[in-house]
Length: 355
Image (cartoon, rainbow, N blue to C red; front, side, top):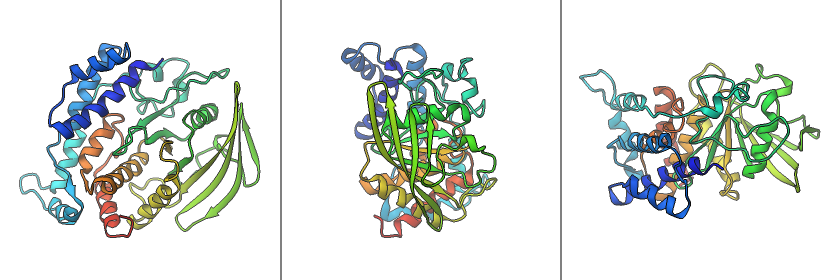
């Protein structure tokens, strides 16, 4: 199960690496080798087409990575206005990003039994990139509105998802269990639109039971910009029983209706706090959620992915990273203000002591 989707996902990342290292790609040979190793990898014509489209969109930009020492000068140059368009070079670059079009299939998301599992009909988990839930629980399917997003070195670094609904909290817990999650990032500050039944965590020192799962809040720490909740996540699925320690980082400085967080410094410090905790759990994906699984999630994942590249290789290409992510979900980083904010965050990061 999931061979076709997995093959498509692996193929994109393999071919992106091939493009970086060799300056060329061979999609046919890549798929052929995968199918020799495991039959039916990239299983359908639609998946093969998607592979071409996603790769083409991710490689469309001719922008070379910028060395960390040159980033500030580069950023200043990108803010010079183009006399022809009246826009800055950075704005023109983002306008090109918005033209990106990748055909995706959403059969599972649109299936009758799954329609209520999506908060919005225009932000769905595509068949090629979605998290496939394999645990068998009565009343549940294999679908959750959640997709994998890559960082620089880890194609499964993030899981982008929406705030759970009453009907999907058990599915959310199934995902924590299956992916062995240790870190959850919540980006919605105002939870007034969320009913009590949609909270997947209880009050401090209380326990909430959800099917074969239970969550107990063992500690709550209030920081200037975020709340840190330490959760004991217990599971009893078939013959598997155990407990994970999960930290939920709840960011409080991004008001509803605002395009970006309150400040660059606040957001960078928050990301650094998440990164420090996650450093001992790098093999486990980070669940990142906002109300619709896109509008706020994309900015966090893009900034963090670019920080990872700076840390690893000492250079960065924001537009390349964004192309790669939007090939999976087009509504990530939906506006120029967030795109510029990402650059501001990276400049702040480079001028700090975290490199």
